[in-house]
Image 1 (tube, helix red, strand yellow):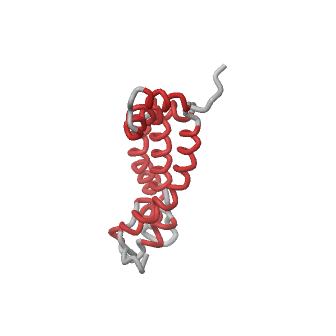
Image 2: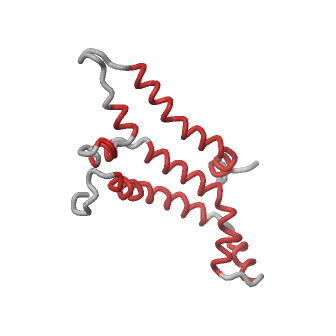
Image 3: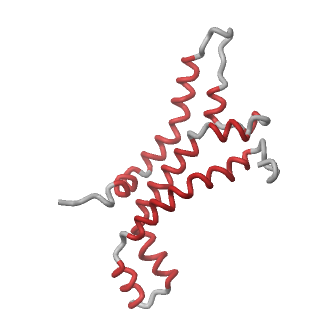
Length: 151
């Protein structure tokens, strides 16, 4: 991060988080795309669709549940990440993420642990995640059950 010139800035996290969430999302989406029937793509080609139109108009709508599910899982893993956020923003407190700031809460004296403040902050931090889950609830359930055996 120092060689890139982004150490101590939020850009350090913008570089590292995709590097660690991208393999997971590619792995999940590759298996999901392989599960799509080839006949859909062939039918779109027969109807005169270009490869880009086939992807955009036929395959992408079918993969929306998987895209939302993996996107949300990647967001949650980045949102809750602590180690890189602590190491890459240690020199710039203004760039620190919420988990790092919560971990640095301290009491009035050295013996006091501010549990009430930590728990209140943790609840406030989960509100955006809950809102996202409620907004995308149907797509998440569809994405999680897409590979399930139906009897």
